[in-house]
Image 1 (cartoon, rainbow, N blue to C red):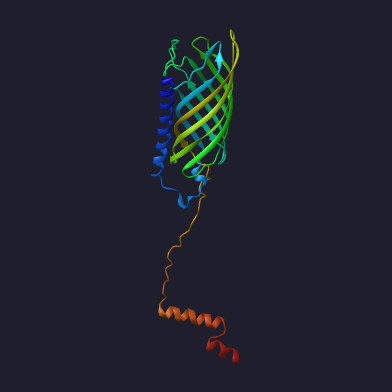
Image 2: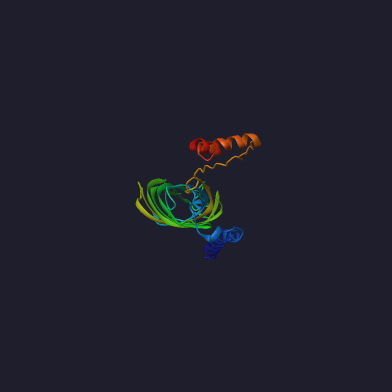
Length: 255
């Protein structure tokens, strides 16, 4: 009992550290002008790499699944607009060699698989919460049963803390998973999985449209040439003659 309590306390402290570290970094991030979100804050691609803890609930042939404390998760997400995207995700909760003795680092059962689905986010300058729903295939087994594949359904969400345009910290991702495996010798088993994850998100591209090209024209200085006095008088005299204001012209008309 004391051993189980120490494991539980250790997990709580670990996730508390992961959660509070990004919040401390948030104080170092300068908010956007006016604090309003813009399309420039929303990335086109998100690549997530992180740690994952899995708590399965199920029993096969008298063996109860144990928590997997050391494992990894990765996903690639492509957003079509500011909110909606398509995500591909894979996780591995597998530790070898299995020896039949359950310890903190060796659960003697494994779960790993891949899924695809839709994701919806609410991006802002600093924090981006999201929810997603996925379907795929999951491989599961124990020290006493060979691994088999079965369907898996995932529903959950999480919270990303933006560090820069190209980097964010996934403070937490919490998922519920349902999977079903058909073991040849022991029949079908339904397992309910709680998965908690955290890690880094590498961001690329932007939802904001490219800046339109602006054409401008700067006028060149105009140089005014001053005509010689005699030539200027001649031109002015000719203009007066044309418009009938020249005295000689009026004298000819009177004749």
